[in-house]
Image 1 (spheres, helix red, strand yellow):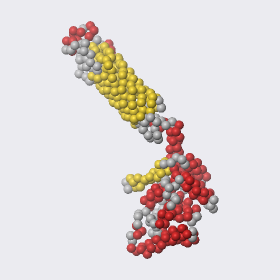
Image 2 (tube, helix red, strand yellow; image 1 turned 90 degrees about the vertical axis):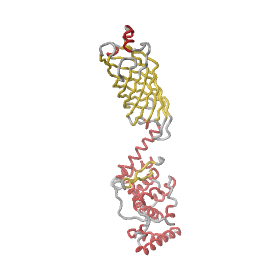
Image 3 (tube, helix red, strand yellow; image 1 turned 90 degrees about the horizontal axis):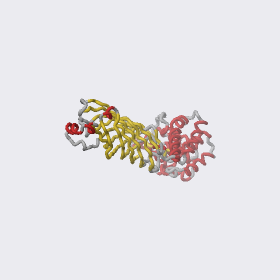
Image 4 (cartoon, helix red, strand yellow; image 1 turned 45 degrees about the horizontal axis):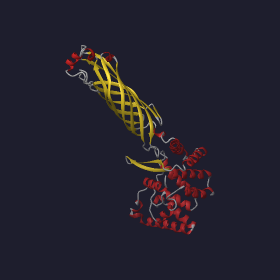
Amino acid sequence: MKIRSLLFLVLFFFTVANLWAVDPSQVSKKALFLRAREALLVSLQSGDMDRAGTAYDYLKQNIDNGAPLNYYEEYLANMKLKRYEDAIGAYSEISRIVLDKNYEGPKQKRFSVEDELHDYLIHGFSSLDKKVADSIYANIEIADVKQEYKDLYRTLQFLELVLNIQFTTIDKTTRFYGVVADTSCAEDFLVSAKSFVKNYPSSEHSAYLKDDIIPFVQKYMDRTRLFREDPFAHKYYTGGFGVHFYKWIGMLGGEASDYLDDKMGTSFLFDLNFRRSRISLNWFTSYGLITLYDYAKNKPELLKKVLDQDVSENLEELTMGAYCGVIVYDSKYLRVEPFIGGSATYYYNLLTNGPFAEFLWGSNVDYRFYATKPNYIGDLSFAFTLRFKYMMQISSLDDECCNDSKSMGVVRHTFALGLGVELW
């Protein structure tokens, strides 16, 4: 929640630039307000705190009349005047407006003007870091300020260093959200915020700190600590895209094995997979198994006559299919993914009208033997895997050759070993 970002958001939410200047009836007041701002500037620069206080009080009292003094300038002016409780009140109001989703904020309009006073007040606060924050708090700590105010200010200071507030507009509604921009003070914030909530449970700031801000930062820091211990932990059970190339062996089972013979050819299997969370979608194609009528052993003349081809010509069958998998186990090196789906196989050496539709199920077991180390949470990695795939395909086909068009169940077993590359 860097100062300039927070200032912009508050001004965006509560001001309309130069609206206080467009009404001709307000010209005399405008002149008085500008003189008051000039008097406040000169007095602060010269160290005349009495006159500075008078000018500031005039502006504060006339906010409803259009005096240009936004919340951030109110905070900074009070800091300069050493009115620390008032300063902390304005500072915490800014934080609550932005961070408390249940707080609507005051109805009072605040107007702004960029002048020398504005530049003077924000000088030294526009780029807050730990060193500057410690220096500012040192003045608060020794001041005559209630301990609750001191603890609140320190907590919000740490939060400003940790959180970067951004905004988006949806359906003409401006919504703020925070992102952790700097973790160097996150632990300090968590300790301070938890202590504040415990010691001041009835504070108007405790609710949103306890319910929203502390859990958000805590979750981020837990992930950050885990990332330091295991840079790949945030990737387990997440998405990615990969390709694999396999050699495989297979066999024919079911009733069809009583009437058909099978043997392996060259064998090749290729698949593509896309994962989101634990779910994967996959497409594959393969060839390599050769299925023949067993009549070729005893009745080659009959088979050749029926097929009108040389029975010695063995064509490798083509299979294409898709399946959906669920990642049931994932770690740095090992991933297990059972799946179900469907496929179709062309039996080129049989007298069929194919392709034949098949129900399939099986599992992928991946050994991730190398992955590039991510530089931050959410960073992509290239991973290389050795994959074992088992697949069972179940269907039926008709023997239209030599057995009265008998329908028989077919079970194809595939055992594949492949190498793959993934964007993980």
